[in-house]
Amino acid sequence: MAIIVNVDVVLAQRKMKLKDLAEAIGITVQNLSILKTGKARAIRFSTLDAICRHLDCQPGDVLEYRPEPSGQPLSDETGRAAGS
Picture 1: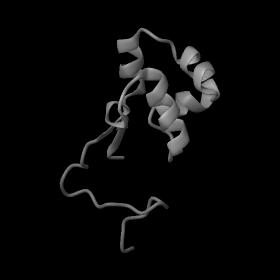
Picture 2: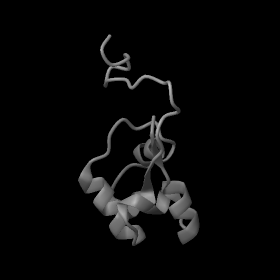
Picture 3: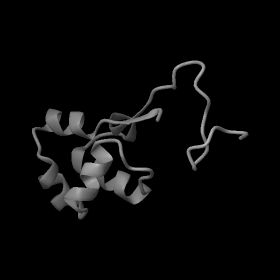
C-alpha cells in the first residue's frame, strides 16, 4: 500500500509508549498497534484528530504517501487489479 503510517516515529520523537497514547486517546492498544504496523485498512478522522492533538503534530507527520513502484497495477478495495 502506498500509505505509510509513522506513528512509531512520532512516538519515539516524543519519548512516548504506544500504551500511553492508547490510554490518552481512548483506543485499545491492539487497534493502535494495527494502525502503527500499517495493517489497518482505514482510520477514522476522529482517531487521527485525537492522535494529532495528543502528539501535537500534523496528519502529515503520522501519515505519508509513497507511490507504488512503476508497473504495479493499482488495486481496488477488494485487492483485485483495477479493471479486472
